[in-house]
Image (cartoon, rainbow, N blue to C red; front, side, top):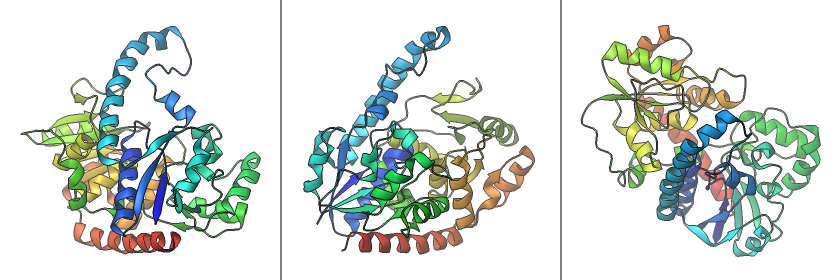
Length: 363
């Protein structure tokens, strides 16, 4: 049996490329041949291009030179990761040619990430597998990214989802959407990154050349949160320096900034940190997998980005790590997390998610 994975593997995003590797590895473990379909969505490629600027104005034009150099370097390290760890299809497909991939696979799995958020792809229905006619259609931890589907998308979702043999989503809210729109049952599965153990992730971490001789706080901020504020507070309490991965323009000058960390280095910085402060779902995931004392910060904007972190921490019983004020930081870091119990809870969901994958691909 040959399985193709369709996801956002070309994004310059740690979570996107690491979840792709994890799903690939998990499928290999259950005994199937796997490839990542090297699909190039035009909008995603443009967004991560060094030449892309959303709206031109003098301020952004001045920033373009810095952004250009940054994206060039980030493209390089992510390309090296994809070549080494992802088993990509021999052909690279576009929206015009993706249909040719249909007959290459017995099963095509779409997921994880926000592959069903049409705003992320500018309406690309190929992530709903509209091009598939012969292969078995399956999703794994696919995300719609919103709690209510726009009415103008109902017909497309209804038509395509009804053709799926099995549907797995990432958030509970998506289960209801699938049921309401397509009258199909869906299950919530673990993010692929949680299907691999700490030991299995060492295959990626070992490729990192990162050497740090002193204790530090690792901060990874990607949303509108108080992660930098909390990391500063924690630094003053502990006397430890702060290392910021992919810092934005609000990052304090006192922090040590890491601008072009590879996915391997990203894992290594979390693995070797004494404390982790993050508002990222995958930053939270790897803090848990590496059994860290960590602070999970909420995005201050009202959106769906908080849902995954809140649901994850609730699932493993680490709600105390969710921080919305400085007053809670001391309690969160002084009480050691019970990772024996956390692992037991993850193991249960791992077994269920793997069972779903086996049944979904008819293994």
